[in-house]
Image 1: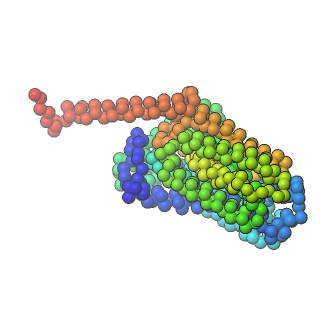
Image 2: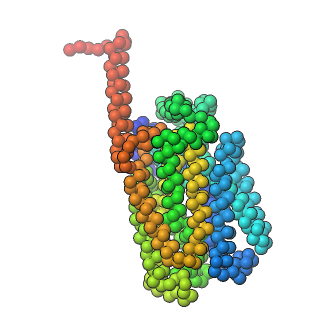
Image 3: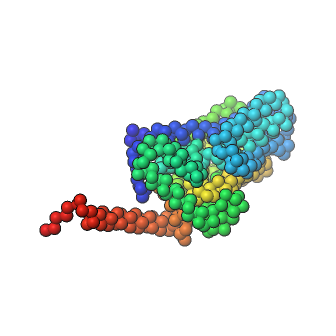
Length: 492
């Protein structure tokens, strides 16, 4: 049991062993199926664009140059456009219907979009419409799901479970006015009695945070929440950091590889359709396997910050090699690219990029955004960060066909340089959040200075509070012994 679910807990109030049970993992796994909608889309559409049957049926076969790039960009990016608006529109729907019903509607909408594409029968407009519908569903669910896991998971395994990509449990919002129901749900999830001291501590901590936020002017008004997010320094810093992470994640070039990897493999010499698709499949397997290993065993050990720095270094190496090789071999302009040693190293670099990306930028931005915002404005802040994700993704997937046509090898150099910028951003401005309670994020982002200083000061403050609480507890016990007539104190 310990080896599978248990994790070393270094938080201020350590969780009982019963908390690390199968239910929280089952909850995370079942909710993570929502992210499969996006994963499936990004995997199938890139391969579909290279299939001769698809090209013939939807007019790509006869298109060339800018016209072909335009068709590809439109087919792929209509999904991201739908996702952007889905992330915006879902907020009021969730406030009205709740998260569970909204997620069910997202599933139905995604199925409708998939059916529309299947029934397109050569009509490109039906492909566009279907991809907009599936995009709306994925964009909406990508906003709803992330916050569940961070609110329900113990700090020691929060990164691990969010890494399974978004969980399904509402905690903070049901506390306000529904404390008894929240206590029952938390007791069942933790496998602890209703009156267990750890359950009481979690409830008290969350309620105190809500009361504090209400005293600072937290409101259910959307506009008041937006004002609170942007006017208070700590909140604004968190929000802008989250939005920047989503932008930089897409500037790493991952979605260019996700959607156009068959075309990229063709450009570096693997022109046969079955070979490029096989290479694309291996790319997906490498990324998936590495993500699973990292999220289950490494993220809560390495931490968010160290993982991002390591992953950025590997990604920079891979992107700069791909840029240099494609420049030297004229991969994007020559029809006869040699399948030599350099080409095989280029394939290896694509897989190397997938590995290091999975260790860092793949999940950490989502983990960060799901765990740092105050509960009163968490949903509103997630609207901004999620929209930043889909807007950046739209820009990249729409631009990539044009970049591959016009700036060719410069595409990889752009992504590599963006990773350099991202690494500097992480080093200077992203504080480590590993092991902190959601309520302790306010302390972290109220500190001044660069990232390392913020975390060092936060640890010092938390340790001081822990020591004061321990001292007060000992003082209370001594006072109890002195005043309780049933306690016999022998004086020597």
